[in-house]
Image (cartoon, rainbow, N blue to C red; front, side):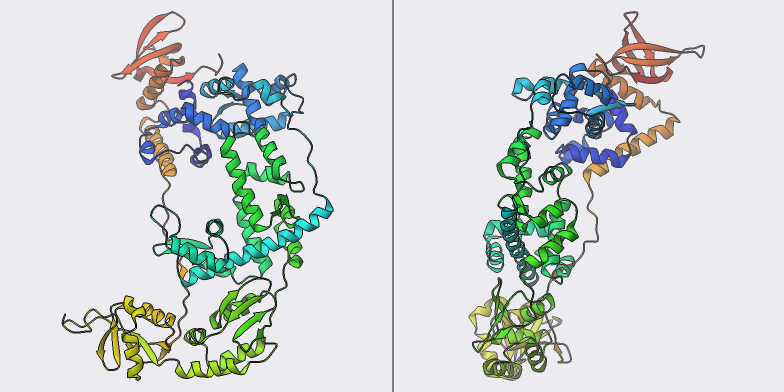
Amino acid sequence: MGNTLTLARHLRGMPEQDLVNALVARELGLSLTAIAGIRDYFDLADVLLEHGAVQKALTRLDRHTLTALAVLARDKRPMTPQEVVQELAPLSSRPTHAGAIGESLDAAASLLLVHPQGEAFTCYDAVCDQLRGWPTFGLPSLEELAGTDAGGALERVPDVDRRFIDKLAAERAFAATGAVTELLLELERQPARELAKGGIALPDAKRLAAAMRVDLETVTDYLALAERGAFVRRDSTGWMTTETGNGWLGHPTSTRWRLLTDVWFARLPGDIRTLLAERAHSPWGDGLRSYIDWLYPAGGEWMDERVTSYTRGAELLGITAAQAPSSPGALLLAGRPDEAEEFLRPLLPREVSTVYLQHDLSVVAPGPLEPAIDERMRVVADVENRGLATTYRISAATVNRALTAGETAESLREFLGEISSTGIPQPLDYLITEGAARYGLLRVGTLDGAALDPDDPSYGARSYVRSDDAHLLQTVAVDQSLASIALTRVGEHRLVSRFDHDIVFWSLSDARYPVAAEDEHGAVLALRRHRIAREHRHHLSDPLVEMVTRLASDAAEELAADGDDTSQAWLARQVESAARAKETLVVSVRMPGGDVVDYELEPTSVSGGRMRARDKKSDIERTLPLSSVTAVRTLPLVE
């Protein structure tokens, strides 16, 4: 393909990280097999200049960049940004500046679509041909790219509408932080299993949706947001909350919202960020869609899906409401997240530190509880309803859970007494007293599985359940809801299981038995169902990075072996590439007398350390040993 040699030489001279960035931005979608098949920079240049790869890259460009490229494609000669401006003057009513054109062409060069030559740029043949053929496929020509205006001016959101939008946005911000809070807490309690084909297993998705009080589709949206913020991570056991997510739970609501919006904003691609920031005070809706269609004339469904994804996230978080940016959202889009949080804080429900304890064992918080109080309350009680007023419920099971976590009857009374505006009702006080008295009637501990006799009932056992109450232990032994942990009686006061003690403990706790965990000395252990995903220590390799490193290493070895940039392999590949593309080269040849002579040659083949080529000036075929070639260069990229 034309210009393969020129591009290959350019790739060879690029810093490794710049090349990796360019390949990532091009979104080539190469398989591992395709990457392994790229042997050198010539193969990579062929991939970059392939018809489909070029078209895909062009569809990602905005109208301004496409217009500048179309000028280069039409004239097919090196042009400076100022020369492009001059060529556009009779075609476009839009003001164009050399600085803006230069930025567009620099962006195209970083994507390896044009070749920089000093202050000028030249379009690669494959890119030129693709752009010139656009009208055939119903895509805009140079005249249409330059001559079509964007349409009407932006409309500002009226102040009356702004107040409504801010109120609605605050409601959504509160709902979003609440949903993510419940997501993280539920994943701490029990991980969510990921299916091999992708997506959360339906039972877990329904469990999360119920805890978050959202529909199944929205669970996926919030999970994706939490993953991008490193609040959750998929581990071998499924989706789990991370230490970062656990830290997020300790912040007040307004800060939780800002941290979520920071994640959303950080993931915005540069073009989308600029696009939305320009409309920080204007409705998005149909006007935004129309402008996107104009700005990305070849973007089609790809661009529409990108914008839809990010605008949906904005609506979910209250950055926008009713398809218009809220005041906090406008500040966020302007790069002022701290001010956005300050603006939102008074719009959110005020956090409270007191509750009403009811005789029916319910707990009513007249607003969202402060994070530290809410965290402790969730150990003592289950959340029944979360909203502007949150309702919890205390039960025998939750009291046992609190005692398991290290609370005592005295600490529970002290905590509830401090936050209650109504004192501690008698039924609740009785429940705490009874729960503390019954706590530990069943004890669960660890076994080492040391029994060697297969006929021994303890053979293979990893945990035990003991109790001085033989009747209670018998009830546990015949409880069909505990069949999954396979309890086996080995004595009047003892059961064993092949499962670990924590599995047995939580199974008994969930079945509402008065169970406690103990160590080998019989001392009670405090346990909390609090599972956190640990940080990954290993680094996953990136096939593109490995490929670029390999190509650079091979090139460095060639250079070290030959001492200059004229290795036999490098020269041979340049000649082969030129022969395939029917390109003309300037070949410098050292003559027997020591003089160096330049020939304009069109290579036809290379083998056995010799090249055959047609001399363009004398119209004869020459055969030259590669060992005599001192340099090879391409002619300037002009027709």
